Structures are given as structure tokens and as C-alpha cells.
Image 1 (cartoon, rainbow, N blue to C red):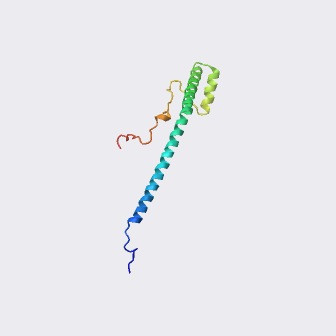
Image 2: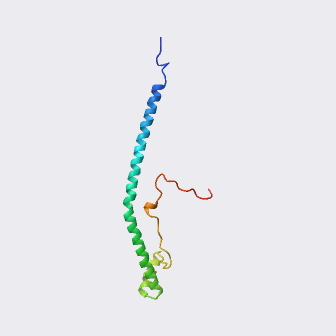
Image 3: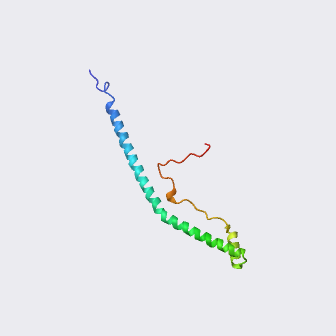
Length: 120
């Protein structure tokens, strides 16, 4: 008697396995591209509020350094404001340069190469 299962070639199971892996890889790739597109949209939506917050930060630093200069010149009200800020842990340096953080569009884009740190 001839047993067909015993002599069956592994072609069909391997073909099914390869088709399954191909479909799974395609679905994963589609999901990753979809998430990448969503992240790019979110990043571009944050650009305007980030720029507005940077502008507000520069204005606040200008007001704070102006208040510090007035306090240094002897203005009692400015001294009171500076002293209250100091009690709350906020120090003002009129000579310090404003702190600038990178804009969101300056962040490395996905897929770009970042240089390796020196010495490692």
C-alpha cells in the first residue's frame, strides 16, 4: 500500500509559511508607515505653539532682566518683586544670554544618520 503522506514534499507547507510571512511583513510595514505619517503630522502641528512659547519666553526674560536692572538701580518695587521671585527659587541674571532650544523641525528625521559620539 502506498502512503502519500510519508512521501509528500515539504513544498506546500513551506509555500504557506512563506506567504504568511510575506503578508505579515506587509501588514507591519503598512502599520509603521501609517504611524510615521501620524507622528509627522503631530510634529508639524506642534511647530506653531512651540514658536509662540519661545517668543513668550524671550519676552518674559526681557521683562525679568529689566526688573532686575531696576532693582539694581535702587527701585524699591523692583527689589520687592526680585526678592519674592528669589524666595520662590527663581533667579534673574540680566547679563545671561537667553536660552534657546531647538525648534521641532530641527530634530533628526527618521531614517537619518546621527554621528557617533567621539571617543566611543
